[in-house]
Picture 1 (cartoon, helix red, strand yellow):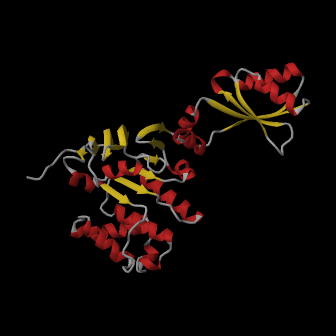
Picture 2 (cartoon, rainbow, N blue to C red; picture 1 turned 90 degrees about the vertical axis):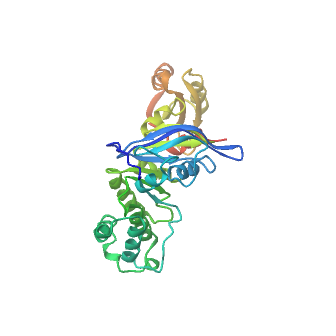
Picture 3 (spheres, rainbow, N blue to C red; picture 1 turned 30 degrees about the vertical axis):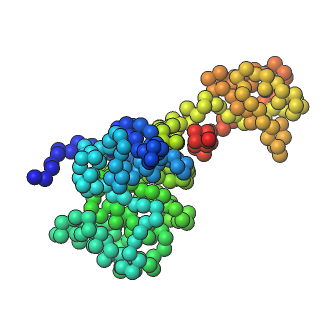
Length: 319
C-alpha cells in the first residue's frame, strides 16, 4: 500500500540534529535549522565546511549518520521517494543534453520526473514563459549562451512543480546582465517556494536571499538576515573620522587612548582621516566628539562604516 501523509500547509524543510560521518570524520556535526516556505536561504561555507554534505542529505543522495531531515513532513530516512517529488535541484555543473532542442529536453524532463502525460505540454509552456525561454525553444541547447543554459537548468529543476528548490552556484560563469536576470528570477520563484541557494558570491546572497546561514567545520556559526549578522559582528563598530588641527600622531594616540576604541588606522592618501574600530556597546562616537571638543580639534567627518558580509564571513570561518 502506498504511503500517504497529509502535508503541512507550509512546505518547510526541517533539519534535526543532523550528523554525517565519513570514516569517523564528522563532515556535519549535530546541526539543526528550519527553512520556511517563501524564504530564500543563502547557505554559505568555505570548502570542506559541510555545506555540500548537508545539501546531499536534503536531496536524499546520501543518508545521515544521525538525526533527520524532513521536507513537507516527509523524512529522508523513511520516505526518500516522497521527498524527491517535492524537490527540484540545479547542480553547479548543470548537466544537460546539449544535442536536444530546448522544448524536447523539457518534455523529456517532465516525463522523467513523473508529470502526468496530459499535463506535460502545459508544464513545458509554463516553464518556457517563467524562465524566459520562449524565443529559444527550438534551438539546440548547445547553441545557447551560458545564461540561457542556466535558465534551461532552472526549468528542468521546476518542471514537476516542486515546492523546494535547491540551487548550487546558479550564476557561476555568467556575465553581469545574465546574473541580474537570474537573481530576479530566483527572487520571484522564492515568493512561492522554499529556496536554498548555495553560492560563493557574497554580493549575490545580499541581493537575493532573505536569510543567511553560515556553516564552518560542520557546525552552524551564523544564522540571520544580512542586517542582523552585521549587528552581531563581534560587537565592533567601524567609523571613518576626519579630525583637523591636531597632528596625525597626536590624533591617533588620543583616539587609541579612548576606552571605547579598540584600534585606529591612519587612512593614507586622505589627509587627517582615520578608521576607528570601536566597541559599539560603549558609544565610541560620543567619546570621539567629546575628545575633539576637549582638545580644540575640528571634527569635519564621522561616518559609520557598515561591516561587509565578506568581513563577517571571514571572521566566522577563518581557521
